[in-house]
Length: 507
Ligand code: NAD
Image 1 (cartoon, helix red, strand yellow):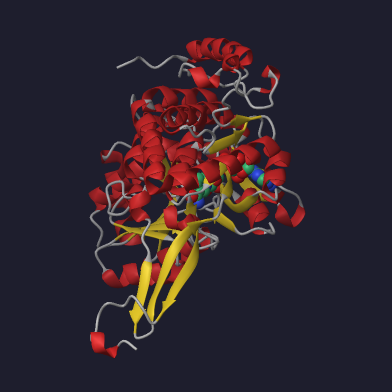
Image 2 (cartoon, rainbow, N blue to C red; image 1 turned 45 degrees about the vertical axis):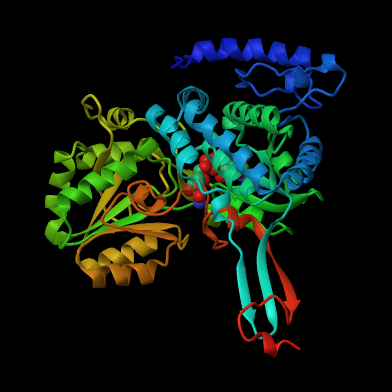
């Protein structure tokens, strides 16, 4: 196994590869100066990717302009079409293999570049995407067979899809979107979050280099090397783009919903947890820590605030401490709240948001900001708050979770509902009362509803089901799959090919 590079080594690699690519012309239409700062190369250029053989250099997905990226993805779409399902399967196999085999190295790059979350989970997210994101096996067709013959409903690609990806999982979202979209025969142009564009470019380059070497197609996944809000807007409105898929917070979700094109929107969440008197409290505590501490609570599905019935409140907090979380005192919670949550927006739109300095930082950093001492290996800090504490309505994306004492289960469910803001994203309950589960499920009406486990179980990690890092919430497609990115086509044959029935009945 190769050792993953450290941050300074990554910087060296960046300089080396930029020089290498500049000589070989490996970025479509781009002067070297416009390469992303974190751009690192490790796959040696193949012979056909060099300018010296007289053919244009392979861009391996990295493009200076939206126009170049869409043009390359359009060519790739037609080439993929010609290779059929087997071509899609082979292309995806390379993305899976690279996500798994290079997880350590790419995970380190993502961590070094974005400076948020936890290294072990950056690595794990790449591995699980390689293993668990559904591919061509999801491409089923439906048939109606009857007295008037056959109608087959098949799922066709859209063409070039525009994808906007978040900083919280830059390359994992791209890898996952790419597997889904290529499985259904599409190609994709990504406008990544600017703070995760280096690792995004490196992952995309590796995916394309391997696919090109095997199948002779480049740019199945294309990327705008210097992403901006303007390039996102240009991509949304580009004639060559047939569908939009955004994964991100409220601003980008709103922008996509206002677009004139069909959009699949994986928007923000603020997942509440309810714990009632029938719950297994130790299991609940372990689950809350596992979900909320994962990647320092950057996941959109991660546990963000907990509502507990009064009769078990103190016992649950004791269980949290036994399970390794650090309980803050009231004054420590106040100190952390002042540091961690700031106000943004103007007038009626003024609202609390997490401060950049603490977003995605380790529990030990939060503990210190609160004036507490953190033991080695601390994963989560928590504390009792009232329902008006800004940590309750805010998607904090940091490993501090507020616990709110509630009179009874009805109050807990109602408060959980209010704190979720109607995003209809994710909710969690720990209970053995099926009526309580049912009531909460109905009131919150969320896309994911997890019972008696950590939030990640809702994505098939410790629970049943498949994985995606894009969970389409306001637009309703749910955990995205290859079929999410398809158009239905119906093919009807009148009076023939239903082979059931009497041969004498044929006219
Ligand atoms: P973000 O909204 O700041 O950025 C997401 C992407 O949108 C980035 O590429 C950004 O450059 C772009 N963007 C932002 N405003 C835009 C606009 N007006 N027009 C076009 N593009 C715009 O989010 P983030 O901090 O990167 O990620 C965290 C957020 O994403 C959280 O709210 C989280 O809940 C959400 N998220 C949701 C899912 C899901 O599956 N539903 C998955 C991951 C993250």
